[in-house]
Amino acid sequence: MTAVELKTDGNLALVKLNDGENRFNPAFLKAFLDVLDKVEDQTEASTLLVYSGHEKIFSNGLDLDWLVPVLERNDLATAKAFFYQLNKVFRRLVTYPLVTVAAITGHAFAGGAIFCCAFDFRFMRSDRGYFCLPEVDLGIPFLPGMNALLSSVIPPHLLRLMQYTGIRLTGEQCARQNIVQQACHLDTLLDTAIEFAKSVNKKRPIIKELKQRLNKQIIHALDVEDVAYIESGKYNI
Image (cartoon, rainbow, N blue to C red; front, side):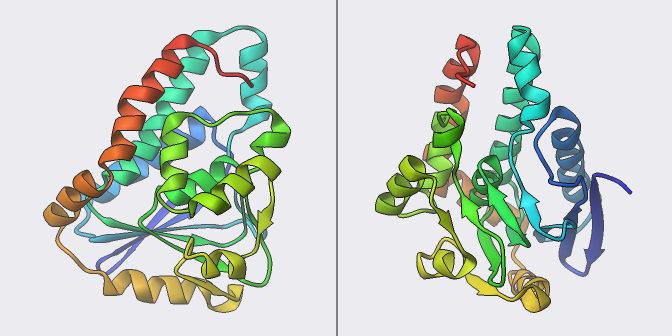
């Protein structure tokens, strides 16, 4: 079983995350970026839909079991390469020439929640699973690009509450705040997200241009502000 599995269905590229809790480490990020390249270069798909194969988790974000030892041994070159790779995933999604949809099939914690915010549309299961930013308890601050992604999706008052308290939101709560398009029971979540994704069948060039304009501030934060933090080597983890 591959870490990131790709299938196509008409105009839809269906991507399944198969790497357990789908934590971000170099191997997982590379697999995901490779699939994005394959969809763009080798298919005619106009919409990308991503979901998780884990029964409870969409993504738990940074793989701290991998990252913390890297930082503890002061391997800044490896850490820097990783953060640039993570930055590339976020930038790739916000500039991707296809409409992107996340079917949040379980918990989206920390970097996993930020990852969801890089998609154009989100659907989330209503029967279980939380959307949460627990970095305050982990002692991890957000990079400017991460804050830009979060701010593009989460209302300011709620984002402040989530960052300062680590509060967990259910799918229904996310739907009420328009963080997700719709909250559905897991039994219908994927079908609902697929139906929506297939209906958004737009040409790649206009989607690409719209994203460049709509996501201008996010792109600037990723390309300019994040670079300064990454080059500083002060990751505060």
